[in-house]
Length: 321
Image 1 (spheres, helix red, strand yellow):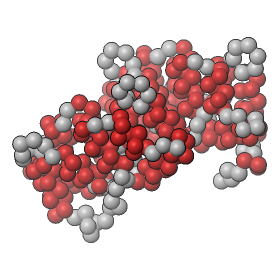
Image 2 (cartoon, rainbow, N blue to C red):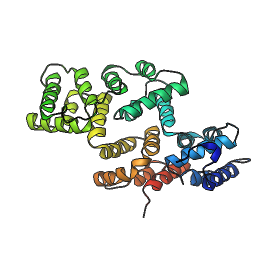
Image 3 (tube, one colour):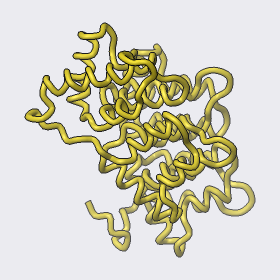
Image 4 (cartoon, rainbow, N blue to C red):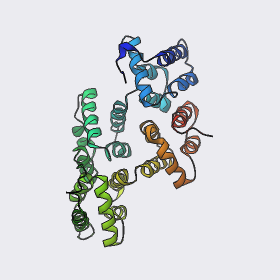
């Protein structure tokens, strides 16, 4: 498909840009109209919208427009939606590292469970946008088990599945190693455990999990709950989950953004923007697990224009009856 800007992307994109410009002219903007236009596209369509807007406005970006026009959580959601997916993720990471103490749930949800290729794109994009090495940034923000796990993920070292190499024997050996470095000793040796979890392709990790459960009576998830605590535990369970049960894991992440006292708006925004492309798989998992839709959560947890944009983007992927 032709992504060359000089060709334009057809009348739909140009009409939308005209509508957005009309809605943001003069005093006060018509947020409802802008929401309607932006949410009518999927991620690829929004990317084209942003490219074309920049081309028609002498280099000024759609993100800059939204930053000027809107405020609060609504502004942040609109800006992320106006960026290419990897740039939005970099902006989320940067935001998560601002202020005192990093917002670790954002960091692990973006950095754990990526493919090697996605990780390489993320690192290059971060450097291109902010001329700062992602590894250096994270080293200054994280420590302990969390740092060890994230740095294993950053190395993009997941092996390609090879039945000749990833045999049942290797699964037994890896399961035993994980047990020896954890439950089988006094004090856990997390480094060795994280290395196996991050290097194992999903098909192999599935075998390790089965062997582990047969041999020791509980799953890898349970083992990590026993070994780790706090954010490192959550991040490790998320890493395993994204390899073995990605859609249930994403559904659980969305729930966690809405759990307890007050909503984690940055995490909720991040989930809706980042997972729109798989929401048609996540939604059935969410309904199965919790008996409600993601839209039900959004309605319960948010309000105003912020609620409207999250609902519109979610409904684009999973229309309500």
